[in-house]
Image 1 (cartoon, rainbow, N blue to C red):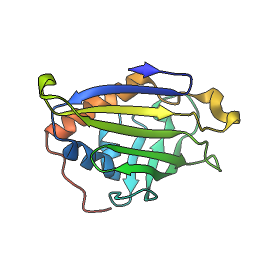
Image 2: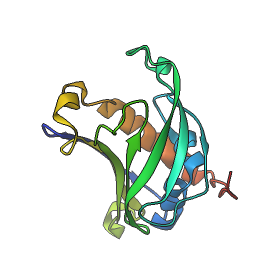
Image 3: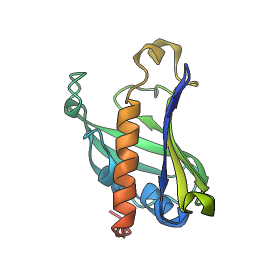
Length: 166
């Protein structure tokens, strides 16, 4: 786990091939399945395959109890897409234009001496966020990032069913 003035992240070793982890992260329903915050309620869209792909996530901020935003939708736009290595996205929701923060995952093969598998880092980066919104960050906690990585580990080990498109 680390934190800078504009980024928080958490890392976990997941004992699975990067391709299995990446498949969950490319699927809009995968994001809902692994969310530790309780905010992601459902998603609409097909698994992403490239930068610029989009999908919609149906949110419920009341799950955190910190801001009275209720239920709302966000459009997720993929910013970086490197199969089995990296995926990141920006969000446009109730604030338009978007705030400018980025969520993402970095994957790297773990050495056999560490048991193999994939070292996965989940992050929230607000270095490019609009100045008038930087005071609200971080939006999620490192505890939530760690929790999501734990659920991702469990989801992959149980054999996440690949989506057929929603």
